[in-house]
Image (cartoon, rainbow, N blue to C red):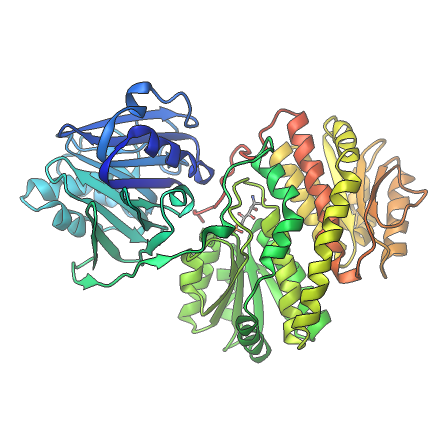
Length: 586
Ligand code: M6R
């Protein structure tokens, strides 16, 4: 995915745009670029890599019309030429794009001026617009005509030096909103870069073209029929920005989990009651990817244990292949921090065609998934900037616990349990924050790490392994502890770390036996438990909590383990290689 930003209003400095664009870098950071209307001309600048060392000339430029882009390459390699904005041949029109134009190869053949300078699908859109302008259309009509032939997903921002009073914004299946401020009107992929300017947002709908002027905007559909879009005022209390005293966003996001849990719990009971009714009436299928998929596994367990509701979990990337076999009247429960993950959105769109009910659990306000859902529970955990999901995961698990209890008419008591748990989360951080660094200094030396757990501790093992591999690049794998002896035990040799997630619960002794089997083959056993045991070569202590709530505390030291190991290896945990915060391609 990519991040885009635009502005039209009173003259501002270029630095305002580049600083704001920086806040979108979590969406993609392999190259970036900005363009400004300055003294009647389009000035632009592009660079490979992150947004730093911005030339003074760009920071100090004065402009009342600007766009910017931070890229995550999909079509075309990482290069200055493929970086956005793209500029028309006559240097008058400038465009940024987030999304994928699926029919760009066919369209490319239809453009008469086929003097393409980049390999991107985005440049094809610019050329179509340019061609329409050359035929005599004004910018709005030229854009509308161009987008009507595009297939795929796109959020576009376009301006022309010939029509300096407007910025055109287009949305289809990629996020885009307007922010109405005292300086003028911004457009951006999400509200994060705009929260220091305004809390008044216009969430554009799929199929919208907005004509944005310095103090007003009008919205149209792709055929240019007017449509009404209202300005929403958003409570900005939950959107914290900056790393505060922490070296990395990921560390901040791990450490703030006890506090965040309190915030997450301020949920509307009525919404939970309504969703609970739906869950009791329909066959339930959880979908999600990555960390959100792991959270779904807890949903299934909580629902059956707390409310006797049976459900299934399907990875969103596999969901379309099983959809036709699901019963009529199913309910899809989609989990996504960003609400923009392509596999999830694609699955939900397909499920809607079968008239399935859609319930979602999402962090980003009014994201695409929210708009596709019949009902949504917001995580309310604040911006999650680190690519590795941490506080969103614990928020998902906590809210699934609350919801499963709401289905069993135990909302209030579960809420109290979770409020108390935030103190235990703090305790687990205090107990482990120093010793985990010592453990990380050992883990950084190894090639493989195995995590094992049974029952509810298995998804914890899965999530811990995902964290370690994605940010430290050390091979990490999770197994159901009982399955170790059916093959994976062959991988265990002298000194291989096996991390055993084994709080004192019903499955403790069986898990311990599996750990001992690994130990007798030379494994270095790291026990995550509220009970010390001689089998553990290294002990990660947990406070005692109710059995179903252990996952919410046992994951925290393992998140810290992944973080410190990555830092020891000089790998940036906030920006792991090959990964982006939201995966908007299938
Ligand atoms: O925004 P989503 O929750 O839909 O994202 C799903 C996954 O892409 C995400 O959880 C990914 O696995 C993270 N990098 C894990 O830390």
